[in-house]
Length: 435
Image 1 (cartoon, rainbow, N blue to C red):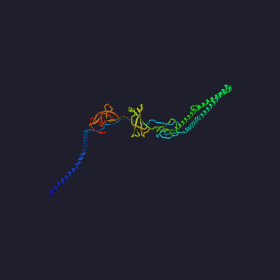
Image 2: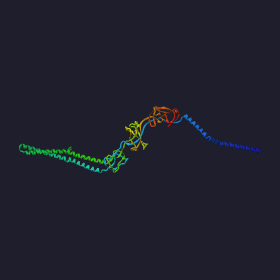
Image 3: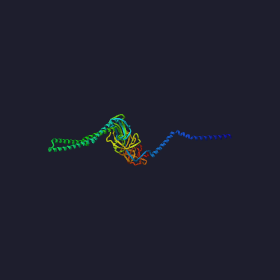
Image 4: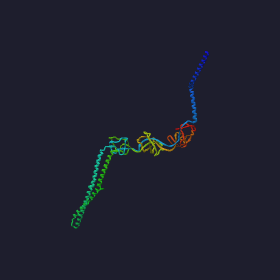
């Protein structure tokens, strides 16, 4: 009994051990799988990559590669000529002195805005004021001489003429009496001769008085000389006063002083430029355009310009001058553009960049130039996406402006074109992605 009981217990223990071993093996199985997979990781990875590559190749073959495409659009196309230049006024005014003198005061600084008539420089005036006093005295003397002719000399001459005429009348009456007496024998020859002399003297006095009246009247020699002296005195005074006015140099017009070459105490000469004024108003942009673009330029063409100091602020300009000659040393043509409404920040000699619109298409079909094959040949063409595939399409090209080309025939607005750099062939299936 005991022996059988022990055997039974042994079997039970053995079965229990087997069950526990089995449960342990089940728990360790995932770890064994992971260890086995890790041991073969390169083989499994290669297989996964091979499967992915095959799937990608199949998808690429079925759907085609992704290709960036560009739509043909309708809009305004503008061809421009780009150049750089500088700002300057239509002309500059050199301001100098009209007389020689020493500078007493300089009232303005370089870069200052001035208005017409504003005093700029003042010269010493002591000598000129003394000359003015002399000229005023000479004029007063000449005026007194003319008044003397009018108030004294001419009236005295007229009175003398009256007296001479009265004397002549008396002499003529005495001569007639002496002549009658001489004929009747009552008078002597001596009396008649005295009467004759008296009448001759009276006639001479009348002629002299008449001359004095004439010369002292307007148009007479004495009166003309007095008037001439008065006019000369007045002219001399005017000249001195003008020179005195020249001692204050004023602005000839509104503008900005861009150069100052004078200081207080300097002795200036007539005609020497002391200040340079840039007049207010229209400003010019002076450019040097490459000779090859000369045929594209015309007067009246519009342009957009920007100063290099303010690149984000653009302003309008118009072509107003094209030099008829070419600068052979630089192979360029001088072109000037007028800025009617210049911005406040624009300054003399600023560097500017200008885009001149030389041609314009208001409603053109436009595609990028990089999508046109053989653009310079007689038979340009493009790849147009139709039914998911690029198709070769001949086109007729119009205006070319920068990175864009006008298509006159062959492509409609909205169609997608493939750029040259895509590397796809006509008829190949692609997946277009719009840029």
